[in-house]
Amino acid sequence: VPRSEPAALLRDLGEVRTRMEEFRASGRVRASDGKLIPIDAQTVCVHADSPGALRIARLLATLFRKDRSELDGLQRSAL
Image (cartoon, rainbow, N blue to C red; front, side, top):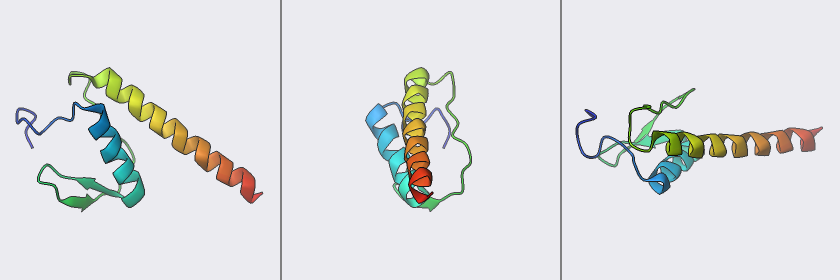
């Protein structure tokens, strides 16, 4: 979807969080038409020139730190 289209960019932090949590739980991302598409992603790209880019990057960093903490706890409990 071209960035010039209204639905191309996520600006709402709640929507970013929901989509990221959905991806982490299912390994699928929601397309602009609402379909869920399986994807094997290793990175997340936040365009620095997007409105709210810094807020989005901070939110994602918080979510990833939370994931890492949960994984570390699971690894410790398995020892």
